[in-house]
Length: 194
Ligand code: HEM
Image (tube, rainbow, N blue to C red):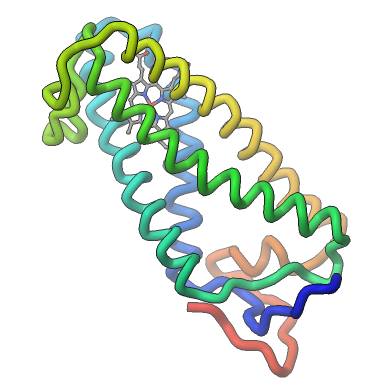
């Protein structure tokens, strides 16, 4: 590894909170989002209030997460990681940031142009009232929202697989340093993130 090692050895509480809250919401939405289409319109309208509200929350949390990432140093690659692993993990992380911001944006755009039913995020934010109905745009953003959700699902599975691989096969700190009460093997000169 030719990069300068980061002095930070584990994520701080802000980064951990953001990671796990976003992660849990997104996994629930990826699983239950697939069932939306099979619901009756009236029931779908009810469930979409929660779906669009949680999705909007993900967008806000992702904006905070990007700002946090830019303004803080994060733990670097571990010594167990080869060059290809470092590259792949950076690619995965970058893709997550982009796709997790695009997913709610596509959802909101779809909701704005939708004809079939109203989308009121948490019963308060009226996305349907923000633009005139447009069947072509609604269909386009539905496809984007749907395709993006498939790519995200593959990434989530890959991400979980990688975390388990690090923990059980490489036996390093990659998973532990993101766990709420995870203890890492400390280096004497190391410091914790915020
Ligand atoms: C991280 C955030 C989000 C995730 C992971 C997510 C996930 C999903 C998934 C998996 C589907 C099913 C796609 C399909 O049937 O192929 C879906 C549908 C949908 N989502 Fe989202 N979504 C998110 C955010 C949003 C937001 C913010 C809105 C609107 C404000 C939204 C509105 C919708 C709508 C209107 C549908 C279509 C439901 C139908 O079939 O009638 N989503 N979402």
